[in-house]
Length: 117
Image: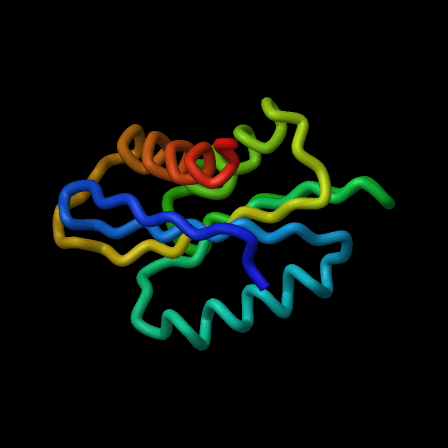
């Protein structure tokens, strides 16, 4: 289902990124359900997507502070002009708070690592 997977660790928090090539929101919903069942103990499962026809884009923070997870992922997709793609990032909290800047940096870094050629 997923084209690529990466894992980054920052201050004991694990950020596991998944890249999904997709054309419909139903494919994204199915992938999200799959990740939720696979990562039942995850703290957050955030994501962002961009679809081309009809054009749609969305970002979800899944309980992270507003604008610190889904929005940075979406920003990476927009800067690279990616279409028909969804990036999910599963986070396992490691016990050390990263702060808003740290979260933005790690979610962006994870998305970037997935989209690297």
